[in-house]
Length: 180
Image (cartoon, rainbow, N blue to C red; front, top):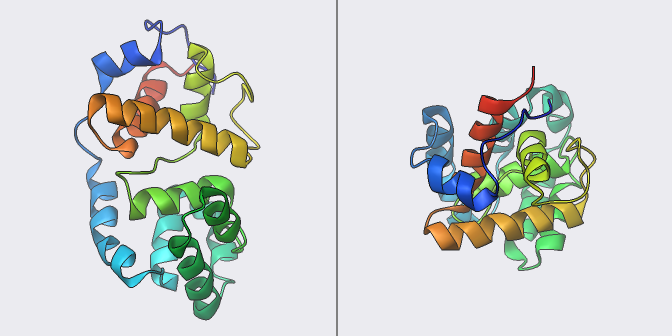
């Protein structure tokens, strides 16, 4: 949904007034349940299903068509590479994993470094002039995701907080000012 006229002239002004410090409890519990993934180096089928239910339950039947072995193989490779492009390409090779879902996987595994690309976040950034493409916030490719990630990481450093908290703050402001 489009955003009403915002009372902020910039993302910096928005964040200086609306930066969240707490994660939603349901999300916090999911992040905690996924703590062992980084050390283990891969997702289980149940963990991928849990992430799917959090991000986009509509995709669950596609997610369920991946075998545990395929999930393990692909997520092991994705979490092992240092290339952001390779991470996204590998994760989106799983059935049911779109780019927004891939970004959710990375975010829930490592909220300090990642945020979710989402229609709400993108629309708000577009309305502030922070991003210049895809005004409706759909059909993202790697370049949009990487642009968003760069913006989120910049403000994460500036405000000394996690990338997820920057992204979640933007998401919540969109909810507050959505038109309709």
